[in-house]
Image 1: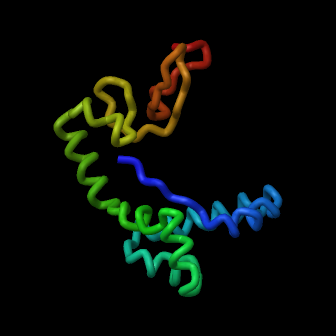
Image 2: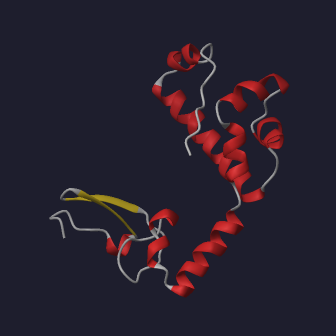
Length: 134
């Protein structure tokens, strides 16, 4: 299922005026707070008002941009439990959707993406293909 989200068009020119370093700093700051939210949980309102420090006027623009969907997706304990079950039962077929190493019999989290020929490999650092394509 694909969702169609949009950013309030009046906000886009403000972003375009920012220099690269400012965009990078703001994006890193937002990602850190979203990850904190994922780890500590809470409502969409808690995320935008308490973690990100916005006022009530931010609710609609952040909702339309997909913020509620992002906030509702977090349940790190659930994903850890699923990965543990996949590891314990050696379920190879679920590794790709859980971002686990694509090497057979390895159930580590993937951290490397490498193009090999016409394919793209997602592996742990122990199984990252060498630059010569192996």
